[in-house]
Figure 1 (tube, one colour):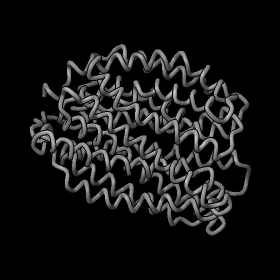
Figure 2 (cartoon, helix red, strand yellow):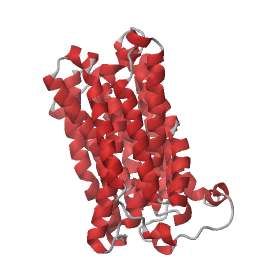
Figure 3 (cartoon, helix red, strand yellow):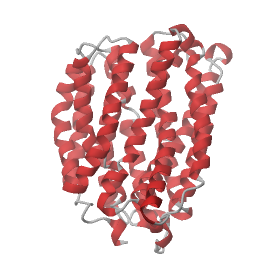
Figure 4 (cartoon, one colour):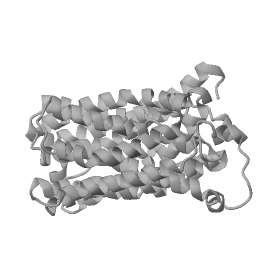
Amino acid sequence: MGGGKPGQIRQIFGGAAGNLVEWYDWYAYSAFALYFGPRFFPPGDDLVAALNSAAIFAVGFLMRPIGSWILGAWADKRGRKSALTLSVAMMCTGSLMIAVAPTYDQVGLLAPAILLLARLVQGLSVGGEYGASATFMSEVAQAKWRGFLASFQYVTLVGGQLLALALLVLLQAVLDDAALKDWGWRIPFVVGAACAVLVFWLRTGLVETEAFEKAVVPPGSLLSRLMAHPRELLIVLALTAGGSLWFYTFTTYMQKYLVLSAGWSKEEATSASAVALLIYMLMQPLFGAASDLFGRRALLVTFGVLASLTTVPALTALGTASPGLEGLAMMVGCLGILSCYTAISGVVKAEMFPAHIRAIGVGMPYAMGVAIFGGSAEYVALAFKGAGLESGFFWYVTGMAGIALVAALALPDTRRHSRIETD
């Protein structure tokens, strides 16, 4: 693992830095969609443009199971380092495509087609990134503080989203609305592609994990080895379905919800989201450390119970909240509940599978859950709103939180029964 504590820190930093850029590139799309959406589609009102942009955002998620299978299998066969390097190269390609893509006024329907292709490439990348990153960071972390150290996966995931929002706030301050819609929206994708090149170089310096090098692969096909763990696969899928839907509802979609439903300005919604995400990011190591002290299962059950009870009242209140501290406080409270899941999302899944299928075991059911439930959150929410049944979305999120609770109750405490130590 690189020899002692300094090696462990270097490994965690290398995995986390790459994860940061991966997720910055992914979320830059959502952060700037309100500006570039109308440039890629036929003229229409803002809700139609938002629906079209959200649809492509959701379609990108459909590639994530494919990416998780390809890169997860690669990580389990060729190594975690190799898969992480490949994933960031793919993300760079997708960001560069969006940065130079022509608009609808220039090439007509070819414009949304290019945008869609770029998101498909990015979807493949992120699909493989999660499983490989969660596996890598969990395997290099010492058992005693694995929850704390592995929580930095979500620190960097949220950090990427926060950086995308921070750049949006900066560009809103130095460019007027017309300039942002005309050409300013291209800047974050240029930045993302350039940073991905730097991370590619950084990840080539990582050291392969000891768990991978010592893994013994049993006979049989990859699929048969994976399907030998049906209970674990179902638990990961159910946890991800409820957890990722809550995550995308209260992070990615929240900015649009405050604009379209609560009547906030774009600038007010962006600023509040940035502050809430910063606080949320800082919460992750605290909840990760709590899982090292009290167990992973206790935190996941807490998330399931509180999410099931608070979704409807929280979203209802946010829909009428005034800009400022009132709305911000409610957002932070919801993100605190979410932290019970996200801080340990990767590590609890990695601890459930043996090393020879760990990356794909973590990544595949996660990618399926995110693709079906998380990635479609914006589109489903906007569709409910367009049909005049916005509160129906609140109950849908509640139901999925209940499913996550059932999965958490069925989960043994992986802190005490980790496959990372018993392989």
